[in-house]
Image 1: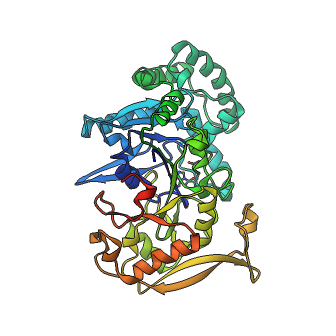
Image 2: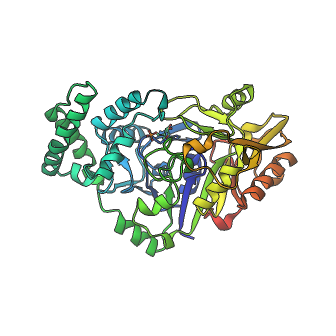
Image 3: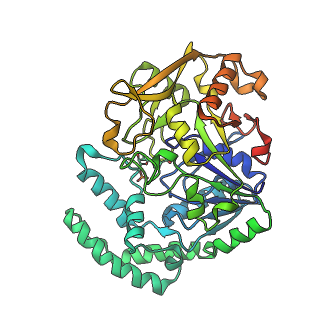
Length: 429
Ligand code: IMP
């Protein structure tokens, strides 16, 4: 096996960063393929904590080539800041390559993200305000500026001057003062200077790596139910977190993907608005939030919490054609007398056969619960399945049965060492 895609199997924040960090040790390339600095990964190495928004978590390994793929929306200001912050702690990091096809997030994207959210009133999406939606809107509208254009001063000047005229008219519609061309151009020319050495063709680089059998890890951002096409639209992000996005956002074809792992928490969380069928707005939900420190890495917002949604997870396994699951944060559920999971949904007393598509279909959808004995004790010290309490093992077995997907890796705590590989054939460790 040489190519492995890691995706978020729920609504994001499944602790993908840790798994990418663990598997990145054996990878030669770690590639992000969608989203931008709306993502947030926390990686803990010993006593040190790293928070990444744009850089692939694998960059911490000096031997790794860390790629920002063409499917991404890159904020140059944030990228430069993140690079400097990481280099200050770790002078020796991997080699960064940024695709010239990636789209540039500019200040007008951020402003429009905020102004459009305000205009939505009670129908807010709850975006991260990082300008991601407006940047991808420009991409689809064919007015976006790409990284390959940013680093060519004359091309950038021409493209920016055209686009900014329209954006300033839009800002005026919202009653916002215009953005000054010269100030914006000069600031971003500075970032372009810093980033130019990293902007190189990625498609051939990755296709060659795959052909040579090098280990390439595709690092998904966000989660399946935030996917523009497969998520709970319109309460989604504007890119493709699903496994198919790895091909779209890098130029590596579908037959070149060997394995797909879906990271899921032992429970459910979501930030922002939109359907969350197993959400608990009671003391149990608060307890999960407290035990799991469930606050957003990017925005610090409290995450909505609930029991595991197996109906959603089953759907996610199919959409992503998962080879296996990575079940994380099973330690967070320790101490509950009973744990629950939704095996399917019902509406008007009928079992739902499909995952609701349009948002109005979610009205009246109820989770159908299975309750199981909980577990306690020092889960984090477990280093094999046998070290876990029987009830925790039963829970894992139940997840596998319900999703018809094997649990390939178990994460029992945030540290690299707190990882149990159950299916070495599906990973490369
Ligand atoms: P946007 O990506 O900033 O446009 O936000 C759209 C939706 O996706 C909002 O509900 C965000 O909270 C959510 N979202 C975006 N990135 C992440 C992430 O990395 N983790 C979890 N939710 C996210």
